Image 1 (tube, rainbow, N blue to C red):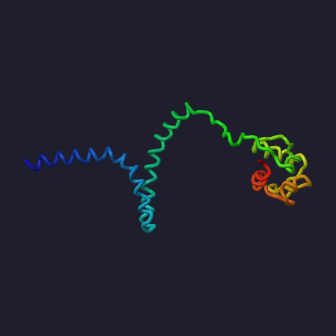
Image 2: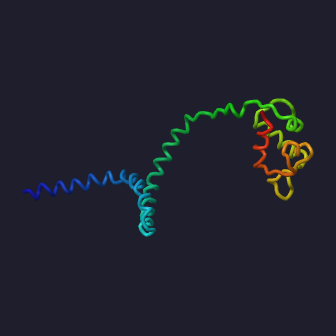
Image 3: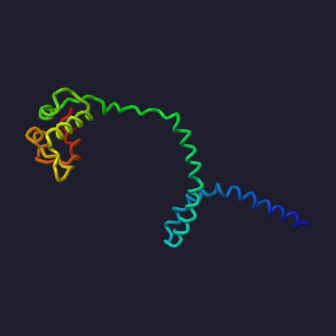
Length: 156
């Protein structure tokens, strides 16, 4: 009789464990980084085991962002970008003496560069300075990546 009581308990236990096994896949991902420290042979099977779990979790994630996307709010501009700054005399000769936001100053510089054909023909990332821009840049040629940093020194 004692064995009869144990067998139903054993059958019921695996049935209960089977349902939570899918939920246990998420904690298995957390355990995977610990296995990566082990030799490569052990890490490779862990990646294969984690891949099906990601596929199973992906449809659930797709449904959730769709609900969140509907009430999305519009982004508000950062006030620091919109603050009007006064250009130096050298920069004012190129973009005008009126106070403008930093973003507008960069736009005006690019308008001036394109209008006067100052972008290098071979290397489009380089800007060749004319007499006015040389006063701002301090050298004959700058890259577009340096441009914002150089302009920052001429805006206050």
